Amino acid sequence: MTSSTVEVSPVQFNARGNGPLLEGYLYHPTGAGRFPAAIACHPHSLMGGSMQDAVIVTVCRALAESGWMALRFNFRGVGDSGGFFSEGRGELDDVAGALDFLETQKAADVDRLAVVGYSFGAAVGLRHAARDQRVGWLVGIALTQANYGDPFLDHERRPKLFIVGEHDAWAPLENLRAYVARLSPPKTLKVIPQVDHFFSGRQPEVAVEVADFLTSGGSLEAKKESSG
Image (cartoon, rainbow, N blue to C red; front, side, top):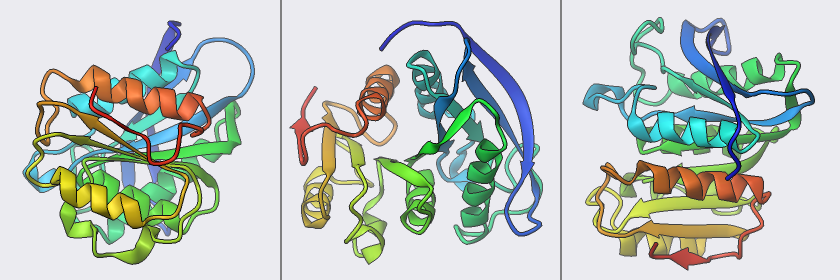
């Protein structure tokens, strides 16, 4: 991960379909040219999730330091974002609106877009990404086991990265391993040892995995698994 100066700006944009106005922060590497860009989707708002989550913030900064634009934002009903929690339905339009917003940025390379999500954000973000061909890379951090029976990624052939804590009770390692095994390649599973769903104190390791995956173009060995 290279080090560079990062510009962070507050932004607002609408969810797709005349949806509510959402707030966010856009991370921009300094320098000229066009940059690949990613959105980062936060955990469940009814459980305290927001764009201020330490995993989300750390991932966005790591991406920007690696030459990617990154957008973190509050889903509807969170912070100063308009609207109300929609149980993952309306939030799909929030994800679409975030990608639409990136497309308006002159410095964004719209042919290189990624979706990163954590927990609830992974479920919503990857569900939208599966049907949005603008997205080139899909990253699910602590995707919970409630999603493993859903076929939305079963035949997805774009590069996919899954990250999980070794002791995650909501995304049990063996269950996630079985889920990833059934997906089409390319796919990568990374395990952060000795942590649970919240990655306390280990957020930088998560961020490095995401940044390395995206800066490599998602070319890490399919089904590669790491314990550290």
